[in-house]
Image (cartoon, rainbow, N blue to C red; front, side):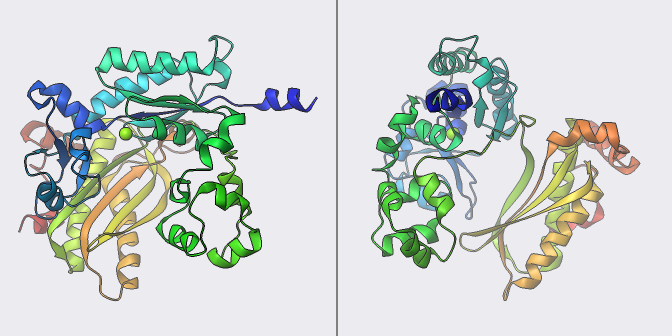
Length: 394
Ligand SMILES: [Mg+2]
């Protein structure tokens, strides 16, 4: 009986992650890059690596590393500034493939998603058959490799794609979960950040298996928080559903500064400039979002994100900017010595769009946005900006 009940509720979850996505797109578009180390990222003195190909990884280059460091590690690499529009174009093709197998798609970024294909199992022989088809169709239509992880939950599916990449394909069955997870470094476990990892190392827990077997009371003393959930994850138990969303999870813009910003007025000017950019792109795509995110990086690498919700999903520059400004101010006044190396604005929460349209007055773009969009369309992006933005051009 128990087995039947377990089978009835067992889910089929796939995690798909494109290999070295930005770098692979660049290689696709420029065949002369084949076999050479390719690094995509910010190119100024404060630039950061977004993605690098496997050739560059051989030299120790990693994403989120300062570009200057990557240049020292691998001076012969080809350095390329990101072309987000092109990546978004390929991303749309990849997500279209997902849509051929299920509507339950949770996009994590342009090149990564969870799919719940439980309902599609009747049509295909197995989860592997679906995973194989997804990999094949992505390859046929984009020329790029995806890594595919398959399991009965998100945690294990994601680990499966990570463990098998590049060009990965791995299913971890329920009875294989513990043997797969136990030997992995504890830092590989979802929710274990740098600080928790150090605390675990301090009490001699290096692997996920050791975390499972650790006495909960001892663990709680070391981490200073409830540990039952953490130990369940370490056993590979994860009930989180795949959240169905609009494929493009977030529209964002960010900037890394050559010189750290220590002046609030200057930070506000940049914030306005990025709010305009994000709102414009959201309007272009007719995507109204609820959640505004501000990303703030204090030198050298401490990154904060702050989020708040708009009362109604929208894409008006003014609404996004006002909320982003409140978040910036709240952060700024909390810092003893506020300085910014990077500032970003994002809009997300597009999934509620349909609901808003039905039950709430539509948030419309004020006339000024429409005029600005048309002028920018005619004369090039940035032709007409709000006066506050001009400060960023100093
Ligand atoms: Mg990827």
